[in-house]
Length: 91
Image 1 (tube, rainbow, N blue to C red):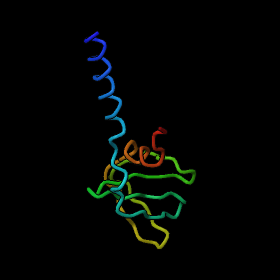
Image 2: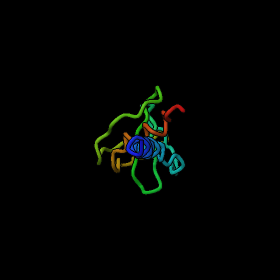
Image 3: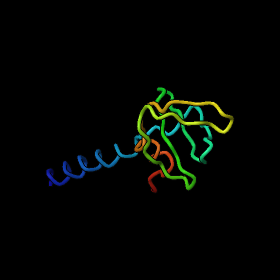
């Protein structure tokens, strides 16, 4: 009986860690000329979102052009982080 309780507690600890995603650390979002959106996180790394609301990969160092004509360089490739924000787990 004690082993069953211990297994249940251990498995619930792993399940709860999946919901520990910080969703509030996007500092700004920048629209690009091609319709994509770059989200800049509080640590300076970036994630890219396509026109359909999906997180897409972009190689670090890639130069992108914003709608107003400025150029920015991709820092990081936070696909999984952005995907967790765009598609939160359902409870």
